[in-house]
Length: 511
Ligand SMILES: [Zn+2]
Image (cartoon, rainbow, N blue to C red):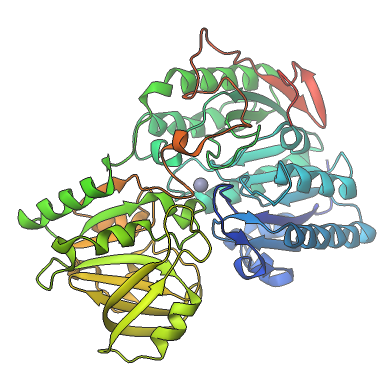
């Protein structure tokens, strides 16, 4: 029983990176927080909050980016050094009781496998084996053996879209403080489940993910159990750690094993029921459905997800394939065509040219595919400049170009248009659009709320929803849905405590 306030360091690097994206994440992509600014990131650690008083929080270093491509090796190594140096300084003052390890779990780093495993190993080298470590992860993260052995209290979100992100971070902090006060380490029952599915098939808005995840709170409330989590895993990387996993933590070994194996079994049994959260189709299907909705007098707007280059899943953000195809459709580019907003392509050079013009001018620019030209080259946009905008925190400068019914959005830097405010902020009222095409997968909340119709367009790109079109070579096999299973896989739990196995073990060596 610790009597003084436990000392807990906060560190992390969080990004979801597609190994299939040509984008490389560097300093510009990662706002860095240290000191009081890092502490202020967590509302539940604000002055006066019970958790703030329950521990001495030591904000060391946190870098967080929106999803993208693999992180540049030198940038990752710099961040890792800053974390290690900061922890060394903290440990030199007094031993740490805990580390709050704020990661996503699907970071790729150029030339490195299991990036979070590398990072957690570096942290363990400083803080030693006995300091309790907790991690609030994204359910699209991966749990490698290295990570499973290093973390005492790993957990993840229970909703996709992640409307419970802050609740999860708070729960994790509370559990960490409680276990430090107990002066003990939880056991954790861990099952690898050989399933690898895209997030758009595993949204908790629909079954079977809805029920699988909805039970976790009740499991965690059982006697002897602290937390229960299902990682669906990350499909746009090609590493042995990419697969689903279940982890149940607590102090009752039998209960954690029983529940972890039960949940893993239910996940496996539901594998054939996962299907796209929205009506899927080709881009042509999506346009036809949107135009039918418009001609039937359907309410505005009809949403089309250009899912193959969704920056929210790791898309590059300058793939031109969809805009190129839309600009070839007279039913969208004629002057009397329905109004379509098309977001977005980033291209600094095109922005320079567009900012030399004035709204109302006729413009002719070539944009996009500067970073990612693997599925299509730059797109030529000939139209009328509608408006210019400056100062967007992510996009920098933005231009809107009208081509008949299309309003094409070009930005200076990579940006995800995932909220109605992203459009409204540049004068594009969401209810004035007949059709909104944006680089997204399942709809994030504000777009979901306004959508009067929707197609999840299965477009090509770095986060192609057709996983077999991408090809994986290094994931563990057999894996559903790529392989046939002659029999039910081994879904027995390994039991871990501290840095080792209490019972069972990794079914095979993990890279
Ligand atoms: Zn996620």
